[in-house]
Amino acid sequence: VLVLEPYFDLYIGQIKASGGVPVAVPLSLDMSEGWRLDTAALERAITRDTRVIIVNTPHNPTGTIFSRAELEAIADIAEKHDLLVISDEVYKFIRFDQRWIASEGLEQKPEDDQTLEHVHFAELSGMWERTMTVSSAGKTFSVTGWQVGWIVAPEQYTSTVHKILPLVQFCAATPLQEALSIALEEAEKPFNDYPNYYRFLQDVYAEKAATLAKALRSAGFTLGDGWGGGGLFLMAEVTSMMHLVPPEYFQEDWTPSEGQAAVNTVLNGQKRVSNDLAFVRFLADQWDILAIPASAFFYSDDAEYESFGALEKRAFIRFAFCKKDETLKEASEKLKAFGDSVKEAADK
Image (cartoon, rainbow, N blue to C red; front, side):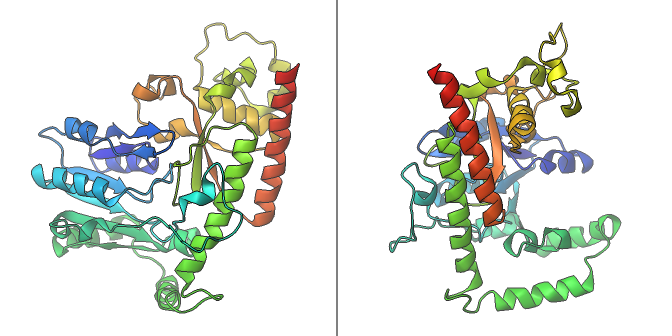
């Protein structure tokens, strides 16, 4: 089963639990274009044992919205090698104009809206017959605890799902299914001076993403103009700031309760954790800022981020902007304090 790396971390466990073998296909990374499909790498990863490609757009954790051309390239490969495609589209309604998170940013809604297009993979030529589209109410309506979603696919695939579901979840609660059916109908109607709820949702998250992007750049994090456009996350690079991290945060057995007592501890041959994990420990412990180490979204038998191919020795961490405005404001203030500290240290 091919997964585009970085990927939603649960994919690996789900593939293994189903008896499959995950094969990671790294995306390429460019400062202006962001994380993009490497068609040649995808083609190289295919063997006679390959059966499935998992596609996720908008993409978690990078926020990338794959273009129609990229998805058509995947479709060509799927048809050529007779592969099933599982298209994870849970963030399809959470898309925004990339100018909101660009370095120059936007202060208000532009008249020439350039919200990125979402392409349903199953609508591409010849793909309905070989695609399972997965979606969910959790992200769109902020009800992740409901665990209600749906699969759209030819009967040959959905019939198998119906056989397996009673052994896993049994069924979603009937009142929640009924509530979702009502929500889907209501969402198409005018909402808060918008033509529908989905358009309102896009602007809400655009502004939240812009707030976080501005705060991250001001604090010294690396965030390319094309690094996002959909979903609920921004992935920033911290490679240039790794020198700020004290050595104790690299210890495998470090815990916050040890505090400053471990500052002078020498690693003495202990297994060293990945750079991104050390950085998020440091950020949480000393600055009360929480993020996710991106190594959780890369596949490696030894889980060492430094071994990840073209991204060797580069460190990335994922931030979420699906928060209340007051939370994002507080986070921005903490990031500013962190950034000011870094600048002061550099000036000494």
